[in-house]
Amino acid sequence: MNVNTDLIGVISAPTGAASLVKRKLNKKGINSSAAAHRLGVNPSTLSRFFNGSDLSISLAAKLSHHFDFDVETLFNLEAQKKVHAARKLNID
Image (cartoon, rainbow, N blue to C red; front, side, top):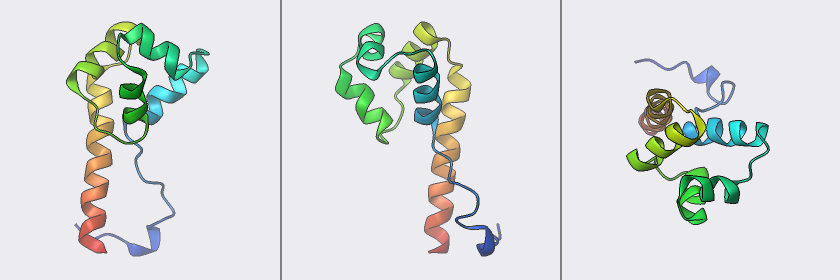
């Protein structure tokens, strides 16, 4: 695939599922500590996810169950982030 280098930096990079999860929790007034408690995970697990770690199957399932996230959407967002990173490696 040819990438128009004029567009690099103009269109923001995909941020993955973490961005969507953060926005939805913030909209509901739920901080990450309360969300972690509700999910039954250590706050550091959620923090790592928010800071760029891959979304685990277990966390995706818990987010779906407790906060009505669509698992397919979460993993599609993660895939888009990885595709973008891979393409960037090929043009630098």
